[in-house]
Image (cartoon, rainbow, N blue to C red; front, side, top):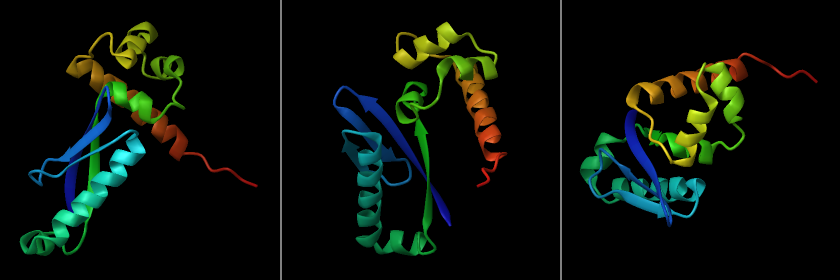
Length: 131
């Protein structure tokens, strides 16, 4: 199964996305969910209409989504910024500025935020709810 990298960005009108490996494969939407669904539809159209792509992706594909740091918190509003900052030993005020877009995180800071999100994901994956 091949991997496709989808870049999702936000602008004043909503979200737009493109696939790095498929030139011209772009989609838009008012919400993250809508742009993701629209992009998947466009990818399938691209593949259905091109025999070379049909051959290349005959076993299917997986999508890896890349989003801006600011968009992460739009996409997952359940994340508590203060608690994530504590988990990742980050400055909560600075993290809020990244989320609001008033400051842009450096590459190293973005990596630290992603590491904190990974820690949170690990914590969530390590539990099982019993009934």
